Length: 287
Length: 282
Image (tube, rainbow over all chains, first blue to last red; front, side, top):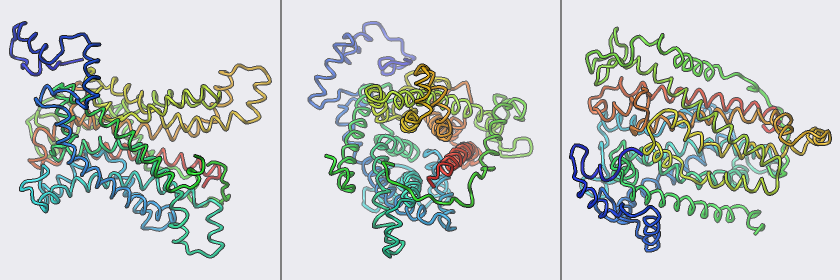
């Protein structure tokens, strides 16, 4: 493992005496055996104390809490828009996939799907903020006014939403194409329902099941997508925190974030299972 | 599809169409990667004047250290091909083995193997890859290895469900009656019937691995001894390429990543579609 927190805190050029290294190690609790350190970690974890950051000189829980609000807002709005647009556009496109506008849309979203999120952010930043100057280049806010925050959030949310829309669009499109071949669709048509109502009353619900699973499983992935967007737009959220902590070899912060993301993924899956039960009566009956 | 029946549709039009664009782009980058030493106009480490604008001598200008950007670009496809294919081969082999054994043996082995798969599926992969890439020695091989060890789950699931089906078929039963060993049956009877769903999955894994590698390099966690597209963008981003509007520095590598991934995804999708039309799903 290259680099260690002690060297990082003291500076590489500085030739430290053995005593000061030992003192710093004792202060950070790194002199104890690994098993003891692990036991202390668990003791603190039960009290929701994730330890103390080497680099930021603050409790990890406090650091995460202060950064979290911004990232949650970014991720939350993007999931909302991404799911909404992805599901509806994807469903329409899968339903009538030979229409010209749907073919164009599919090609467009396929391109977005193939673009790494960091490059998409970079392009958006370059075109809209740098060349056109419509949006600010960095950060969450300047004045703190509501309109100012919205202006700062617009591009990052746009990029992340676009990215999520493209994924959801592809899944939904494939899912609707599969549902379209089922017999209940034929029956609905035989009983005289309009094409649009067959799609939104019957096919949509069934087709959205894989989408819900995907979003829940994807929470970790979405958070990491947000990481790249945050880094490109220089926003002080969780993503930049991971990055800064990484460069500073700030293990308590990294562990804390990793634990936090894992808990989020488990929670998201729990929510997805519940939503599954609400949407699909077959799942409800099995219980 | 849990027993719901499908209407057999006459598939019309685009059945079995070869995606010329996808094949062409893929071959182009493959050849560029293999023959980078011959094709690139300069050695990517050779130094000229820094920050040159695009000209006849340097089609895409030079970067902050005076390296020729076009040559770096051509050499960069090598890293993408290596990491993408390497990681995908590893991931596909793991997913294939787990899926095959789980689907063939059913029962307890299936539950255990699929339990492991579910655990891996839940791991937030990108943050973990970032952590590992930061803690281990930065090298393309390690990145490929880590990606390969984490990206096999969806392949395993698809292979398992297909393997469950195939294992029920009569020719597997007759092989059992003839007294062949289980491992022999898995690899000579079940495996050939699964290969056609594995190939599209393989292509999509290549795409995911390439995007992940590019993202890691963009964070500065890539292999410093190999020039990759992600790393070029990282340098452009951190060393003032963006704020000085030197678009020829960071747009071409980004486009290359997108084009290459696009080619691979296009291949994967068209193979998947072909498979589904053959099965009468679509």
